[in-house]
Image (cartoon, rainbow, N blue to C red; front, side, top):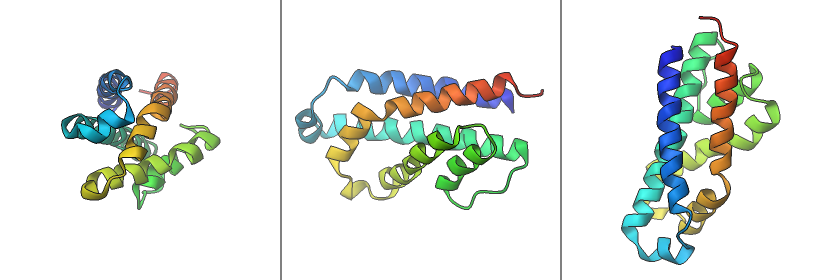
Length: 140
């Protein structure tokens, strides 16, 4: 399980590197360039998916209660101490944003995508930091 989580963390870091490269684009660029917008949306989606996949693996490993929603994946990680509780509360809405990216693609608010790109990548990075700390203390 540890190797699988590490592999997902590596993918997450790769996606975040790509997303950071898109930060130089303006909101107007995102509005005008559908290819750029699609790339940003897709990399945000797979980044959040990585976090949720990691969370589900850890929850299974820890034999914690089974989440019924993606939001609960993050909340449970807070409950079992993988994530600090206040961070879990702050990060949990990312699951809802992932659902919008996946299911509401025709109605995605480009301004929200832009704000997420500019302000919220650090949350994805912090998630990776907390998971790495968890893995350091994990029994094999």
